[in-house]
Length: 112
Image (cartoon, rainbow, N blue to C red; front, side, top):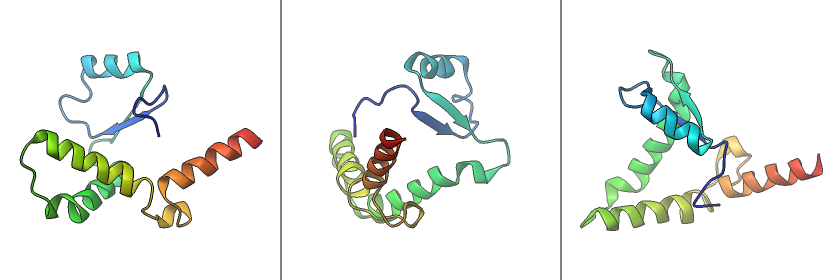
């Protein structure tokens, strides 16, 4: 996975004050990102992001103590990139890790 995703990256947020702002939307547009935002009162729009946040907090953050922001940043990066994306199996992905599922998707795109 790339540290600098290309155009088409979807950024999902709730409709908080800063996210629908013109400045935030302009940055996303300049980077080629697609903005996805929950509708007011529609919790289902945000279910995937909320599920991931719950897993991150429950399986990792609630069991760690970080001495500073740098240590927290490195630890969270390792959890997501080394464990979650590469090894954690998901029922929604046919019990494949996100990296395996993404690779299968790319292979199907090449074959089509």
